[in-house]
Length: 412
Ligand SMILES: O=P(O)(O)OC[C@@]1(O)O[C@H](CO)[C@@H](O)[C@@H]1O
Picture 1 (cartoon, rainbow, N blue to C red):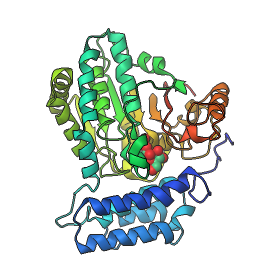
Picture 2: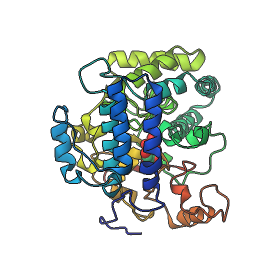
Picture 3: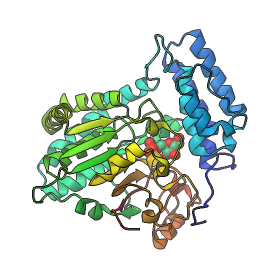
């Protein structure tokens, strides 16, 4: 696989590819699920049916003339209009699919359905589920552990929380792969946790305010451990303030919006024991500005982070560390291309304006920063960790593996 900047951009036209399965199977299944999840009026039902036909058999059509963001999307990809969804960059077609899905449900247009999150029923069911109860109760035992162990457990919780991804579950039997509690996770394919902690020492002399940014991924069972990690950073003095970046509108099914942050903070604050204490601290931190939420329009744009606008660059440049969560953010961080897996992570993230850490379970073909022995071991073992299971590239997309990769500033 190529290592240079001209590694192939991922498209969805390759038979048997993961990207093709997302467009051919996951998107149609999702349209159907959203259609069934609300008593949509006729106009929305017709629009959802039209989207289903378009994304499976049709071509990309422009947004309507009244769409508030028509100019943006014209600038972002008018050259794709009239082409098959499968033939354009995967990152672009997925992003546009979610934009069209929300358009079909009336999310953007003035009227009674404006602002109604079409994925809310799925998010709500997860947040109210017993798995969350169990995960919150487990925080009581964590509170009794030594500081170093607590830090490591908070990081692991946030990392493996990324496995609980509702979009990932669409089209899988019973959503089975969506992340039952990870009791015995396989070794990380890259583990630079020590480098991460070294950027945020708890002991330090008084000085400038230390900001940590977290680019969130999924709500619910991922965002709750992210918030627990944030609480840990704030209470241990590893961060003075945290900025949590979320999506400006519902996206990729379970991606977190501001409403989801509030729901998760409330779920924590209403719990008993250590979870409740953390929730109340987080609630207070949001109130006094130590935990701020941002929802920049760029988070739903179909581009890699190397193309982020100047105002975001400016924010990250001042951070002690930016933690980038999840698979989609990883694709955007290193570029949605078929890199050789041994391509340098530091090189691929050199564009990022400040120290950056990726916490991600592997759910797409994009991967960099592995050492050759790890690649050989993974290709030998396939998805399951069993040698010779015949699915030697499935480790990239199965969500069973995870990584912590770090680029401290200045290391290229
Ligand atoms: O970013 P997340 O939540 O970790 O993962 C999102 C995801 O499931 O969606 C895409 C397919 O729709 C994949 O690239 C990716 O695995």
